[in-house]
Length: 72
Ligand SMILES: [Zn+2]
Image (cartoon, rainbow, N blue to C red; front, top):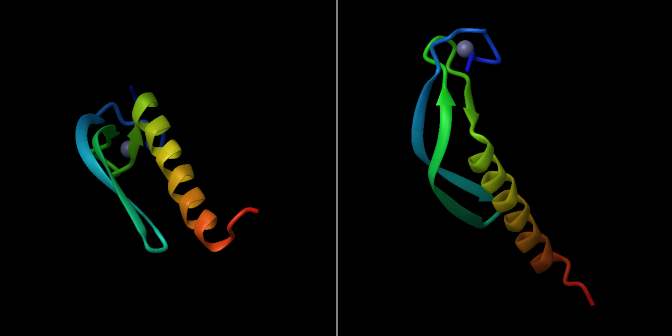
């Protein structure tokens, strides 16, 4: 897969832990797969990791909002 930012064919796959922080909440996503460009430093999650990332982000925001604005 080419890098979407610079078109380089250099991206390498990387497994990493991603820390999500929002207000006083934090959450670590383990074994996140990402394609990381050695040329420009652009990183891109793979499909499954990106889905987990967005879900976790939504959950963490929901958690903070739920606490600040309790629904009746
Ligand atoms: Zn690049």
